[in-house]
Image (cartoon, rainbow, N blue to C red):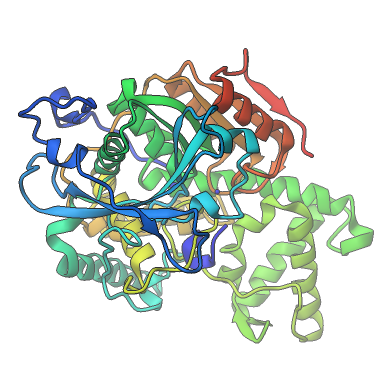
Length: 512
């Protein structure tokens, strides 16, 4: 787990070879409520919060405040940056347990308004027991937002490989990295998942809480796993919805999505073939696939006109996420087929937008705050992902050319999109290596079987990495983000958050 197309596209979630922390354990800054007099973070963990209504569009009960945190936790007396947080108080004083932090995914997703976002389904029982805490992670939204001055074209994050356009794609990746470095050079290397986890712990301390509970979506599952690794004694009840493979965070997340699209495409072709009378795409899976690839070839020769916009074959392939929703995909392809046959406009089609965010989508976001750079979500997404995982990205453009050619053959739907060159190839390294996730954590992982952005295999890998966790899988569940779409999975999450009891064993839920 969707927001608008630009807000919708990140790793999540996939995650490059992980690295052990470069900092010794003492620098994890797991502070106690009764900080020692010489605690270098005392000024941050004991700062007074000034709560006020977030904005006139939000309910009066949603209160906001801004914390100061170190830009670089190795130098707590140095530059500071803002973290904006929100709070919706628990509805029962008698039943209140603590705070539940919320993260929508990304990286780059703003979460300040999540406590009142109608897209988030949180049960009455959970709302009784927890103050819901939203926050914009550092560099995002109202938390000292970064921008790179990127044009609309430069925010298009995925590119199909062709020999003719590859040099242009390399220039694009270099330009994005150079613009971001020029605009935010001193800040970028500190916009990391580990520092966001440290910020979360400062939020915990400033709220006067001994522990935090957490609900994170998509990339937010990786952030949650990093917090449980860095601050194991501060982590209470953690729910990870649509989990990423922590061992593939980085370049591997794109490739995992392309790999996962192929079995989804196969499933769709069989589903559509059994309904040839309704959609007219073929009576066998092979015929359905032939119909699709004929459309791609035809659109590459002469783009189709869809909703008044040209749609190329690469644009059709870029819509890989559609094939995880078999009914919607069938209607879409039937509409494209009709448009190709009679030259008319397709009402079922939609202009391809090749993903403007690197990684998996999270839950729907909220409108940008005044003064936020127009490219903040894209700039912040690249900033976090590239700073976290720079070592996983080759610096030689030819490596990307070879990999794109190879993976287009392996995964025809979108393999070249996934393995093509990205700005991380030219990014400056972050302030420290990424966190290796592989530890004990009593987390609950919930996952759809057919998730286009954080595939099932990645969630299973997260489950194995977090020893003591339990997993709830929605069989035949389609789409990214489980929350609010399945009563069985929602019930398991509610029971865990309200009682602290994980399921006795992993569960499989039927679709509603």
